[in-house]
Length: 80
Image (cartoon, rainbow, N blue to C red; front, top):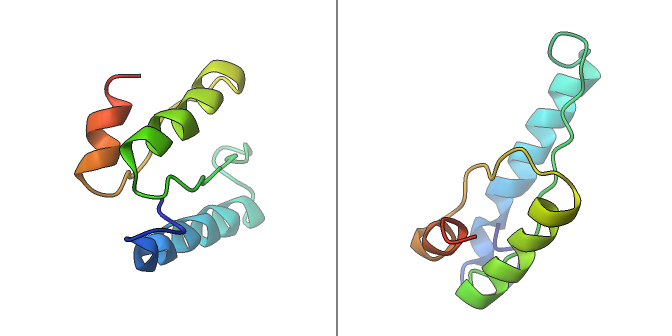
């Protein structure tokens, strides 16, 4: 999500998603498993998006990229 930069007003989407997953976890998760939701700032910049997405994919065994905002993140994340 863009928490800074030209599209930062849309950062509220990521904050809302984080609150939703926290609510799910507070209610016991899904089948008693908590969701580890990580929302990172991509600055809505293609070079930043690649750098931001590579770490979780390579180091944290990322399951999926969820709800990328706009065309730049989607175009860049498909090339990772």
